[in-house]
Amino acid sequence: MLHLWEKYVRACWKGNAGSSRSRSATARASGRWPVCWDAARPASAGRSNATRGFPSDENGSCRPCRPKRLRTGPWTGGCCIAGPARRRAGRRRAKPRKRHRPSCGRLWARVAEWPGRGWSPPPVDGRPRVPFPDDPAMRVCPETVHRWVYADRHRRERRARRLPRGSRRRRRRGGGRTSRFPIPGRAPISERPPEAGDRSGFGHWEADSVIGAGCDLHTEVERKTRFLMAGIVPDKTAGESVGAQLAMFSPLPAGARVSVTHDNGTEFARHTRLRELGMDTCFADPYSSRQRGGNENRNGMIRRYPHKRGEIRMGMAGELREIVDEADNRPMRVLDYRTPAEAFADELLELQDQQGCCTSK
Image (cartoon, rainbow, N blue to C red; front, top):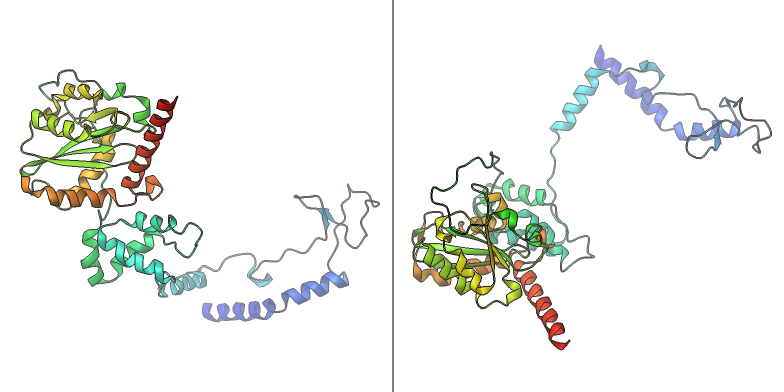
């Protein structure tokens, strides 16, 4: 019985929908609509009697009062029929949905190439905006890239392994204990320059170590540009770590090496030697790696190749250089989809211009 009632409602509604606009125009022209007069409005308000009515809420213009009718028709009584609505929703849900594929061939070639190189979906979405800022066809949603990678089994096996991560992990932060042996001359992160905290200043670095089997890696990341430098150290000792830092920072100009934020590991116990280069040193809070998020992100990118506790040898300097170059030439959303190498080079040029202006004066 309910199905017959639904068919009757649909038939009546289809019969009324096709001619509703023409009947409305005819009724408006012939004046068959009832006109509601506003008692508070005088008869000599400047409008004819045929168009005078209630003023609207937006601009006070007058309009005739139309009788209120539901879209489902007067036969429904103003109520919703739950059964037919539920069945229609089920039929719509069962219809197949085609996944979006970029219509632009140039964009499709890049979408197919970049995830295979280890790029995450946000850079795949944002990088085309740099060479094509005014081309709306060169746009793709990160969710579209995710779905394209995981839609096909063979594509998922080839490319999903190169993605940085499949899902986010959430856990409680902080709450750990400090080291039993305090680092001499340790300055807390609260004493770090404010331009280093908000990443507005150039030349502020984050230091950390990547543990490997045999040898370790020492990494430095510039906070503003996310530029990565890394070197292989024979062991995780304070002397080797500070030696690697001096070798990395010595070739840089003074404006590009201002301060360093360290981990609380004992390998940074000789951090005071960096003051020979005029650099300030500070340490993050215990068990608060989020305060050095840029360095942790770069370390995670390095660990895709030699995994944690994986084999690292002193003869792998060439392989490490390739990994660092790939990380520094990958666009990032926080840099407006520029690469860290491009951002670091721009900062060095700006620093040279400032020094040249000061010298000329």
